[in-house]
Length: 302
Ligand SMILES: *Cc1c(COP(=O)(O)O)cnc(C)c1O
Image: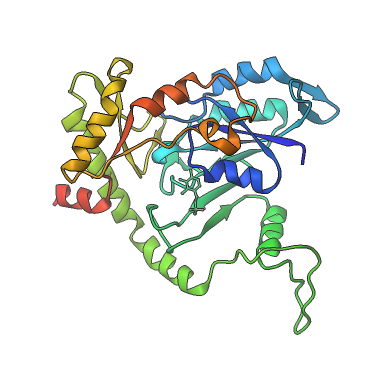
């Protein structure tokens, strides 16, 4: 009830909603220009300014509330720099949750993302790299947490041959069999999808990166991206070109989109605690997501 959850302001709204559903309060962190993920160095400075160790807890001295967890998000499939983030979380004894919804198939130093914190979430929503129509997957290396998630996702029904007995308020969050069957078939195609996504990204990078005034977001050196979405980032002095460019692209059948509004600009999250979010706001004003369907990548690679 009185918990804060640190998460990037640059994310899809579902990240913040997940905390809000549990009556926790999002606490927004800024992003890096390099991969749009949480800026660990500046988060570390922010925490040392506001965090108070009390008993076994981390208290935000500005709000008096407990800081309960840190959530990172691998934006467009680009892995965040996990090692320093894991280290920072360890220093404060804060559990790390990866919102890996966009990042199935992405790796950090050779290891799949979603494997570096206490728990991770992947999405199989219709727009993601692998879909089951809807739904997703929780991942953890903690057997007790896995059992607890299974229990809660099946209405907290205790196992019995015929009795209907539920020992707490659970949820009907199991994946239906039909969706799971679709997911199994989709998984067989994951390598092809990744290859097509990466071919398309390589094409965008090759053809657009020479152009003055724009950058194309590429995977950081320490990891591989699934390139779920490609992003064109205007130089700050060109930010006013975002809307005309979006208009021209969409007029010419290139379905392009701006970045999500950063969370602190949404009405329900505008009063949440946060660190300086100037990078998040700047990225919002100059990012354009380009058409990123795997089909386009297949056409390029033949
Ligand atoms: C898609 C997405 C989600 C939500 O996943 P659903 O399966 O649609 O609930 C959460 N976080 C991020 C960053 C996403 O991109």
